Image (cartoon, rainbow, N blue to C red; front, side, top):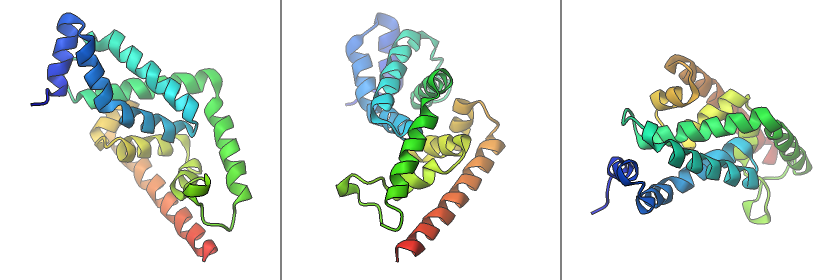
Length: 183
């Protein structure tokens, strides 16, 4: 029988059980890495931020109160790591410019993942505002609810819903336009 997140957290808090924390990392590693990758569009930076998030979670595990889910708490830590990195290095903007230049080379062609080209969804995400992109990633890539995304981002739930709705509409229009160009 598999232990729940709360049971594993209790073991870590009670005895600094590294094995229990390792299980939590294995359980949520892909989620956090994918979240960071979608937000940064940079594999190396995403891996660094995910690793920093797990280190911070280990150091702050005592602060997990059990309100909400462990996944939501961990996403909040990862999102904070992303924001701190963005503010310090402004590397996300540079990465998005490189991504944009790459996509301009393949205009008029359908992106081909096998050839290493960017996927259409990543292209559409890159064209959104930072807050729209981040909230869509939080809700759709990590599976957080709107309430959990509001908690992670520090925004009111209504604002989260508005940004997501607006971002989804922009993406839908971009993807439909891109598909029409390809045909």
